[in-house]
Length: 581
Image (cartoon, rainbow, N blue to C red; front, side, top):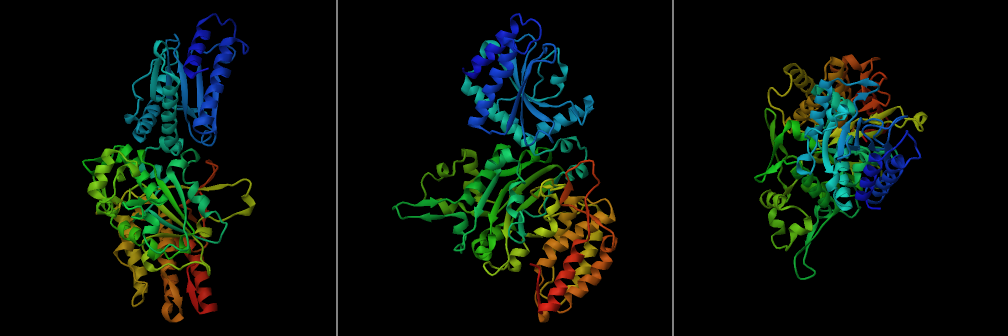
């Protein structure tokens, strides 16, 4: 039976004499079995099999507003938002509604809290380009559903659309739901930027190197940064080949073998275009420029490109263009309004001779006009993560690469604890793209800025007359890191510094005793003073992981750079040379 006819059957059964509440009645079966199974079949066939569908007819008595719940099995536990079909009490129509549960952990929200959360949820979602509305719904006997409606669409009984339209609407609603799924309900509850950051951390750089021994979960870490329902859209795995030697291996090239110019696309270029389409869909492209507002920015979720075994080929060669363009990203903020620009990875002249290139890219006229004027640059929502193994089969990294990346010793930041294999107690925090490229005075608290500048200046003095000297880029990225984590105590600020040393400074130090000399000893002496609140027996907060149990105390760890420096000093003593890796 078609979905539209099933809806009509449910309404017909509920408007006849239902009698006493009975799970074997036709009204109960129509909602809880026939409609429920139909929605399950549609979702399993056309969308995602990991959805939970349940009809609600009442408990002991018939519900005044019968409804059907749709939620995702993976995110249901941590997210207090769900999809529902709500039948009007007079059965004159049905609402397809995205709803907020009225309580969390058995604590009811008050009306003001509900309004605040609903407002944030609406600001995150690109619902304005859909058939859905944020207008009030009318369910007089169940006012709570009216208050907790985020967006909805109404179907009058006399004009229920055909099954194809109903399925299309459900797909769009599920897409909106999955966008919200990455925002834990705690995130939606938060009032301040400080509290939001606890859940979603903006990186200082959209290029990560995840280094560690094989099998520690580097690729899985990148994949799990995207909620499972959204991975097909926002996650791309690309295996790097040993024979990659030039940018065309990454971004594609023009072939004239057929007699006419054709562009040979790569998965990387297709994914970059897909990320740009998300920016366009959120309404941030107008007049061939990228502009928007801070409140609307969470509508654009991060797109993760994982370059697996990134250093099987020489990164400085095939990734050269990307590394150069990466440094041209420019965010400009005017209060809460922003603009973004990047130089092109692929300039408009690259496709001048290619017919139907717009169709090959699969982009709208508006995005095509943007590309024609600006080229295809790096979209602000794209994060590239390269997994790295350092052995005799791989290539080392030059400082050009390391200076443009955040380098993680994966086992130090995300250790494999065998005792928690079956029941993990911690999880990585979700990461998002940077929203600043360079801070200006006033963007960061003066005290935090001055302390951080003094810290890096003192450390940089230890690198005088060595190839490890730091420049403005390092200082800018330190300040961006401090801005991202918003530390409130000296311990938290020094934890940010500690991780900066681990991801940006120590990876640059390599060589034999002649080259390194006593740099490690001088660093250790300086860091012992600069990180005095976390250097000794005292532990520091972990900024990159959190406890799975929300009631547990915040995760604390020893000072990372202290442990790493000891390892590197031992390597230099034992072998006469040292490397971070």
